[in-house]
Length: 294
Ligand SMILES: NC(=O)C1=CN([C@@H]2O[C@H](COP(=O)(O)OP(=O)(O)OC[C@H]3O[C@@H](n4cnc5c(N)ncnc54)[C@H](O)[C@@H]3O)[C@@H](O)[C@H]2O)[C@@H](O)CC1
Ligand SMILES: Nc1ncnc2c1ncn2[C@@H]1O[C@H](COP(=O)(O)OP(=O)(O)O)[C@@H](O)[C@H]1O
Image (cartoon, rainbow, N blue to C red; front, top):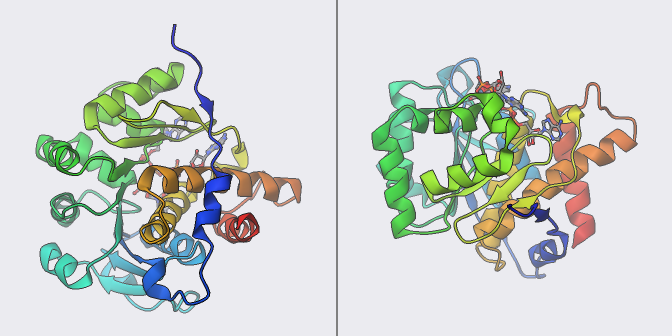
């Protein structure tokens, strides 16, 4: 019989994010986020805001929706560019520390080109979410590119499926994912060789190297569109800072998962939710909690 997963308990590690007095934005890292197709620009903006408020030095958005690829008056700090099929050139010039791809990405031909370009870009931490996961579930070439990247650069990719996306990746029904979440996590790790975050109540987290951990925070107020996009941007932010603060992608992801769920619980205690709790409010609460942990 498999033993139950241990509790995710990462907050002591967050102290590594404390800034030295001479640090500058270069020490906080450059995050490049890709997604936001027409009708879903908000998903990339939410991920971008999470990345900004959780402390990345630069947050750059490659937005697929031409109408939204312009400065955002509510968050002028975000560097928003129109996504281009010349992704190799973009990555060469931008030299990101971390890439996140998926929030509102859609499943267009351009989305596939961008994902393949990112998978072929070597060595840096990569967060794969939402439609990027759906594209991988529909393409043997993308899955092979993911597996090859992991062989060359282990522990540098995290996948963040919700149960629907996990089901598509494994070719099973969502009910089967939920009936044995631990077994599903292990199957996803075996298939992809990635760090995997299986979201939902009591998010599970594991990798080829690490036994599964379970997040025991979080609440159903988190069931609002965009909440997962916030997690993606938060992982990117903490991993970007982690590059120069001795946190690897596994550790950065654990901190982000626990901070996200703990912030949502804290807001519910304050009467902000569960009904009507928004992803944007959760970002601000995460910032406040993170600064208290340092
Ligand atoms: N503001 C925006 O522009 C938003 C855009 N979004 C984007 O919209 C695209 C589609 O994503 P969606 O996730 O909405 O839709 P999907 O069609 O990918 O998945 C939704 C389905 O997944 C299953 N599922 C998800 N969480 C579950 C759970 N905890 N337990 C059981 N089943 C669960 C359910 O069957 C649900 O109907 C993505 O690219 C996403 O990033 C969403 O993030 C919502 C916000
Ligand atoms: N009942 C719940 N208890 C705890 N966490 C939840 C619950 N429902 C949703 N969540 C969390 O909210 C987030 C939802 O992510 P996701 O489904 O990807 O949203 P979206 O695609 O709309 O951004 C995940 O982090 C998930 O773990």
